[in-house]
Image (tube, rainbow, N blue to C red; front, side, top):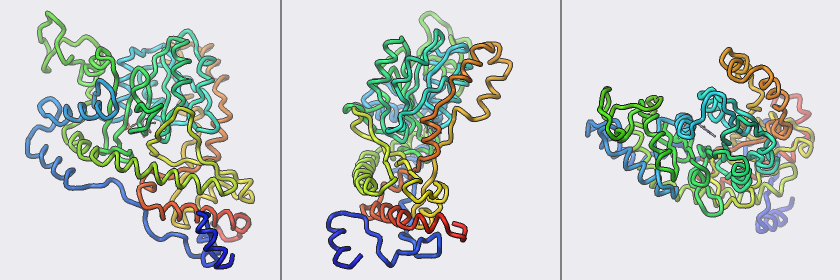
Length: 446
Ligand SMILES: Cc1ncc(COP(=O)(O)O)c(C=O)c1O
């Protein structure tokens, strides 16, 4: 490319690979980028002040402090939900919510396979049976068209996961759930501030859960929340998350146990958020909207650039999705358009160019731990061999299998920087594309 052509291409917003970058970094050339992407978490005076405030108050747990309560109020307001209950982490938020929905041993719950293991572990923690349905090829979300066929007389709930922070097909999920009388628990662990038709996700089903684990867009190291507009549901969740202690004792009961209210009426555990975590969340929340806007802008710009590169197909949105949290930036990699360069080599080549990338999830529905659980004494007793045999036969999810072979992920922090960072990402991918044949056939290990 001549200098004049390069200037014209740049003016047209095209991704340019200059001759100075001609040799791939994986083969000894200069990397496109030497700078690190923004770090995480971001710590400012508000975080330090919050931790100090809790430390010196001596009130470190929700039983005597005010931070968790303040966070619950603020987070409910933020997502547009009537109630919020903070929990120890996103996994316990799911477990608490499943309790609140009365999911029990012998019940079946429909889940997507393209999710973090916690979605499924929470179902298993209730001795319920997770039933996987396939993934939508374009959006990487649960394929809501497959829900109805997966329902049995034991199915009680469906868990759409807003994976990567982009909304699952909530119209499809809610319609199928209504038709079959199922509860809807939105796993919004990755989807803070994501929206479906202008409403925040987590508020469209019967309840929603969030994670505030260290990698998440809203972060307190560990942490989680359940949101809902159903006050009775939240009270069941509340009691479960604090060792069966209801917020208010049932009328006429006497406090006969240790604990502040006593009179337990259901099972429980200790899954409380601490005051320290709540103080961090209150501080981090101040930045959430501005950070989300930055990700929105950068992701839109990046998608435009990546769509120009043959073999790179960014995950689409369902019609109805109006905002993504961009917890992950996901695209599909077509090796055929990269001279057959395997995805693993593509990832190494990209990382060598200074652009860290990963391959994301492997097929969760095929993980050996599931077979161990199905074979366990408890599951054999509860579900019987005939149902478990049928489960195995139906557990073929070809769209998801293929996605797991083709997906590439960037982390949310990569979208927090400058527009020029997005240019670097696109330039590096274009460079690998340009040199794909050389990388595929190189005798030097990439
Ligand atoms: C989709 C999904 N669900 C649930 C969880 C569990 O959250 P936590 O790690 O806070 O327990 C995560 C965490 O990564 C997640 O990504």
